[in-house]
Length: 302
Image (tube, rainbow, N blue to C red; front, side, top):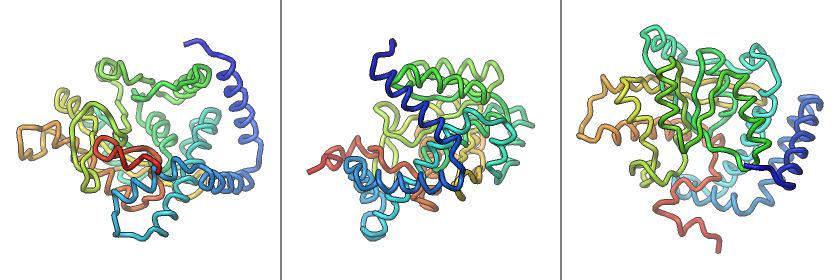
């Protein structure tokens, strides 16, 4: 795709933003990001509405409207902190990147590597997901990551180069299946964020509501006898995270209740994502239409 005038304008604006982010003292930058998050929360009515719909679907009347609004407001702060991770992690060394997080339950990953298992890391748009992926790739080995191509070709090229320096191979969604197969053949790991709405896949439960979810990770795990390892970068503070690793889902040891193994494995992954969201809901990306398939009308603003 050829860049147009608008693409160049956004690209140079992004470069300016990146320059400012990198020279402003960190303690001032943190305050600036928090202030910016509050401003976005006030004026970004469309996505604030989407987030409120999602929280109503997920929690119904289990929490108050005031609590829901607080979660939404804090989620913008989490998003801004994560955006900073995307920018800073393009420039810093491996050592500095790894120093920004500690890891829990690391033995799950180490045991899978020791047993020479193929690994599918699954995560969500949660906390510092722009740290979780490069952290895992730099520490444990090359990751083939499924991701949507950015609309701006100039920023997309920059994104690919940044990922490459952090031991990451980008896979476009349209050719993700072939890319994941190739990754396994080359001895690499695979990573996928599986928490967003999708047109294709299987219907599962998420917060006791029907949603569509990709079953690509389940199919891949069954076909290649791979283990699925869920992990999340939980934000403890600005530039300070805990990589939380859940126990591996091994298809060879799962006691399936039906013939639809793909769906059961997909549900198991969704259950873990829900569990993590419930622990710190303000760190999930509530601003996307997760329940769009069955509750499309609710997202329309009156």
